[in-house]
Amino acid sequence: MNCSVHHSVLLSYGMEKRLDPVTLQLLWDFVKAKEQLLKSPYFPVLFSFTAYLTFCLPYIALDFLSTKVPAVRKYKIQPLSYPTLGMMVPCMVQCVYHHAVFIFPVTVAHWYWRPVDLPVMAPDLPRVLLDVTVCLLLFDFQYFLWHLLHHKVPWLYKTFHKVHHKHVSTFALTTQYSSVWELLSLGFFAAINPVLLKCHPLTEMIFFLVNIWLSVEDHSVLRHSLSSFL
Image (cartoon, rainbow, N blue to C red):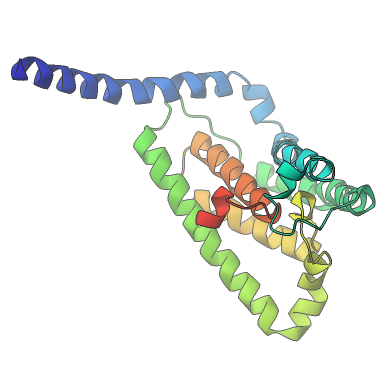
């Protein structure tokens, strides 16, 4: 009986080890099938903008819902603060403007100097988890130093960072409500870390998604959010 259980555990462990690469390979094959889109100079800015809006929408809905439903309101850190449409629209307009005028040219230059290489094989799951974790930790450390510097030096704060603190009570769309310098600086940190670690393109995409999601969630100021524990 014990031998049977031991054999089952070993078999399960062996299948899991074989399944992880297969699962990621299926995902990578699906992504790689969109090779023409992935290699387009438009893809990075569309990917970033779409991911950002997608992660913002649920929190925008919750903000509007909290004005009518007390059960939702109790999960807000500042339950009496309600972002209005008049507050959200300028954030949205600025986001579109920054992506079109500043981020797009930068991503095109990046696309030109570093052409997209799509390897045949997907990365192993443990390597993906490790690389994403290291990228997040590096970015968090870089942002901490950047943020500290811009609060310690009055000129930097007034010139570049003050706009990000316009809204005392933040909401999802204030995540990227910042100066061009701040947006491009943080974008550079996010882009350079996977390059330095020589991450697989799939790992790079997962890191970008997780990083954007955590940033949006952090600005949503909801109680018990995942970012508050990281």
